[in-house]
Length: 112
Image (tube, rainbow, N blue to C red; front, side, top):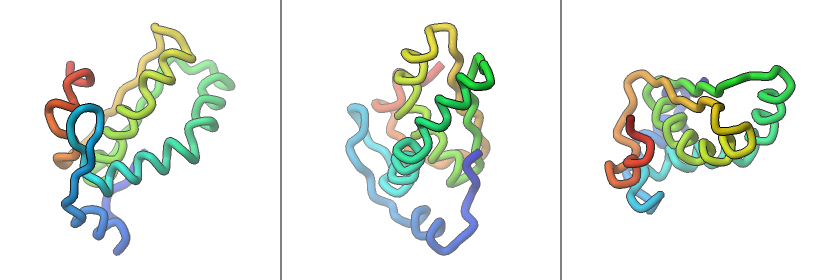
């Protein structure tokens, strides 16, 4: 689970209203940096746990700042995880109070 704003550093991430090119659109820079950090430092462990426990899905959740980070994290890892685990594997982000973190043109493939 990705948490919301708890520290001064989190508040700075919230306030950094800059956007970066991402998946043919734009993503909020601070939240994208958080998602990239999680992917780069924890994705191997997450995939190991999925295999170890025989999970049939990965659900990422968050609130507020954490919801933005988890949404972007799913965009970053979904294709790789599904490719490795199989097409029946479920990857979802279930978030609350998600801030605007991704432009509609970048979100297209992830919308239901």
